[in-house]
Image (tube, rainbow, N blue to C red; front, side):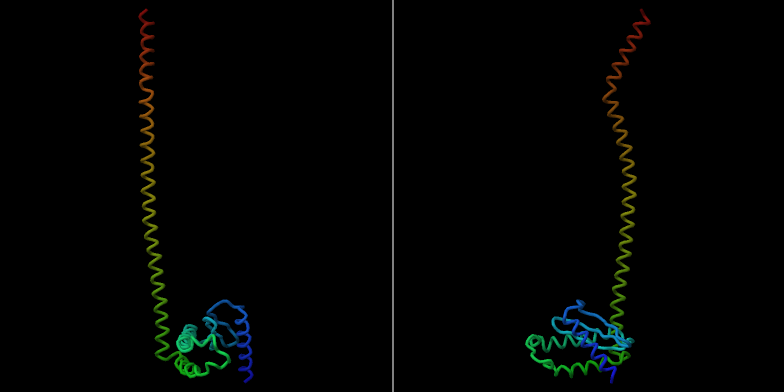
Length: 193
């Protein structure tokens, strides 16, 4: 009985902190001794459960999601106008019925929920691996294009040197020929005379 009082006090302290906005996370797990408080905050409503540490976190949050969805479906338009703490006491029957479904983690329903979660994680991981492999293929393509550009730039540089050489020859060849002819003429004139 002392333990129950202790955890009630912890829940009250947790709610006090949450109501002050000390914790911004909309989903969180808070460890306390051999138990864990899991909660979801949606709008102005906090859905909280206390589980053994060994209870699967995914199932705890699925339980809270089920409560949240049913509560919003049933009482969404009454939340803001609730005047007393136990305004939604009728919801307790749904809580108790849902709690029974989630108490045994080995039931077929809960195992299939966990398997669905595992399948989703597997699909995400498979998709991520495929994306990484796709990035690897794209990197290979980029590497090949880079190699091709490097070799083509070498060819371009060689052709540019050849064109520069040809331009210099075209520019200075007539002048060199005239100078050469003049020198030959002077040489020939000096030899003959």
